[in-house]
Image (cartoon, rainbow, N blue to C red; front, side, top):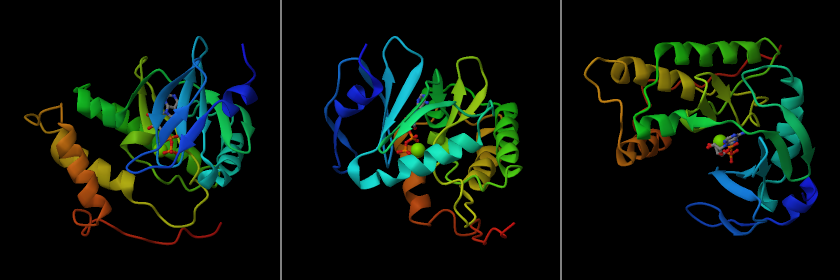
Length: 213
Ligand SMILES: Nc1ncnc2c1ncn2[C@@H]1O[C@H](COP(=O)(O)OP(=O)(O)O)[C@@H](O)[C@H]1O
Ligand SMILES: [Mg+2]
């Protein structure tokens, strides 16, 4: 098998809109997720994931690696095995993001939501400020447990209300008896678009400075 560095070097990511394009990659890498700052691959026939940042976002790799080091041993997060200038090698999580669960109609439970809260509390106890907590950064594993990914913004100092707003939407709509549990992409993406434009979050958003501890 090739070395991690060889695998990283085999990848060329083009920053294009609306999302990155993977121009080339080693055949042993399977694309499992395209985010806003990186592309994530499963290394075939292993249980590891390689998160590779294109040059414009390379600086995030080191920051995210430092935060994973602080989270070492916390079972709500994948373990970090190795990090370089533009990549992280972490546990591959078998399962679906909460976003994909809603799309596919995989039911979410109130216990799943409690577990996310538990994960966030465990992060706060370390003096971190868990941020960017949204449906694509939370996974429901094939064993039914919750894992959080994408920890790069856990040291930001402003309060991020996304998870509060998602919980409110889930409790006032999704968990109601007659709400369908499979939600079409156009509706999910429409809500996300309006939320980003601050059309649907106005009454909820509270931006406050996290007090320096
Ligand atoms: N360890 C992992 N195991 C399985 N899928 C993952 C893993 N890490 C990321 N993903 C998938 O890749 C997507 C993008 O990863 P993410 O770390 O959120 O990138 P970004 O920082 O660019 O948002 C996630 O939404 C998820 O679908
Ligand atoms: Mg992400």
